Image 1: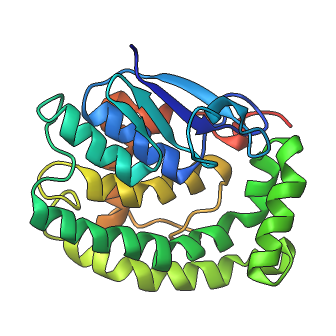
Image 2: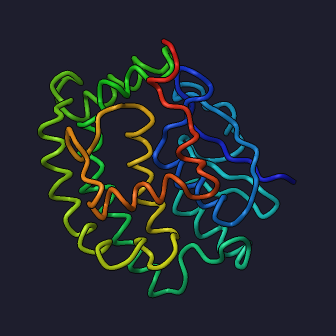
Image 3: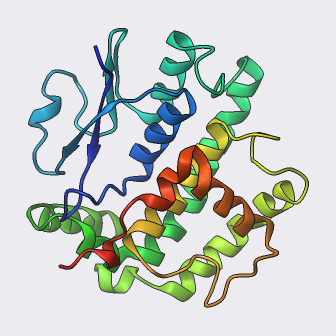
Length: 239
């Protein structure tokens, strides 16, 4: 069967912004696998009733079902080990190091990106999903989206979080060395999320083209025939 990737859609069917779904998309492209992309809403989980997951991405292929972006990395390495550009993760030591990258991205960087784009994100989400999404997150944050959305605070968080990434990328072109792999896709998911839903840069009012992290982001945007750069942005699609 053709692999099927279930992913989140926005107010327009062309808007696909989930950072976790983008990880899966990039992993499939890394392996040279063309999958059918099935869009879903937050409030309609019926397309994935066949599995135990209530969130996306979900990947279904001849080898089974994977229900998380990290699990999808492992699934693709197990069942398509030499496809495309080769392993996403590598050996057990590489997997252990990747666990740190995952935790760092999701527990240190994610909140900064969220505070950067919160109000823009609400407008990018499908109208049927907005009340559910906003009320659930406001309960989690303990404040309204208007209070949570703070570009100055967001950039402060991100500037600190970006320091080790800049240090690494000052010496090599990608997080995973000379070519991109799982660590790059884990982190870039948040960059492409912000890029699609908002015109606000995580780097400040102006971006320094000599910044190693800006250069890395641009390399990532151009990967796999520019799939990230070609993805429609919310600001390009009328409300």
